[in-house]
Length: 59
Image (cartoon, rainbow, N blue to C red; front, side):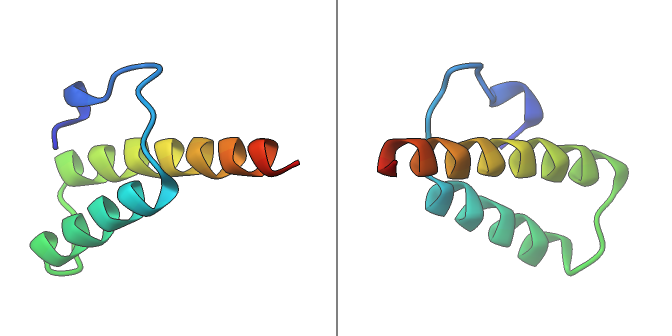
């Protein structure tokens, strides 16, 4: 997934985003390039938003 494919308001579960983060690390072999680092940072932000959303829904 490219960072440009993230759409504001697009909702994926934390588990889905986590799987993508894991796949990114596997593809990168444990060392991220600058482009992969940028993608990773966007994914972490998306993951955190999904976690917050799940917590709010549970409350």
